[in-house]
Image (cartoon, rainbow, N blue to C red; front, side):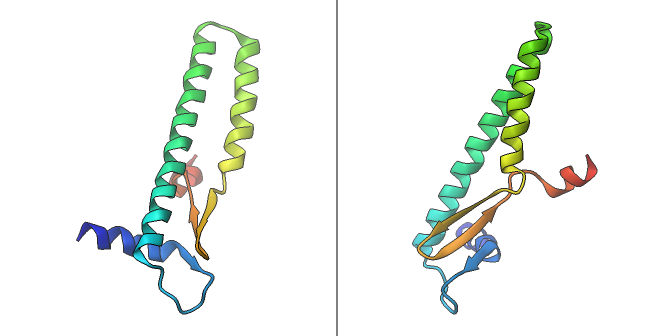
Length: 105
């Protein structure tokens, strides 16, 4: 049953380029795996930036803080709208930040 749950969620996100065709399970699994990889890399990089910025604040290194903050801002802006992954004519949008968080911030 768990497999069908994530498949249903993926189908909701899929943009079908080939009209009228349901994506094969292999394509769904590939998209899901790539989505999880993208998300993992995003979360790792975000945590790394935050850790380095906190370290520069603790060290009271203003120059490093500004440099890291600028890099972090540029990096986060690239992911603000998420990314699109594709497989065999199917595309899926990946959003990394919770929309509720962004609106409430």
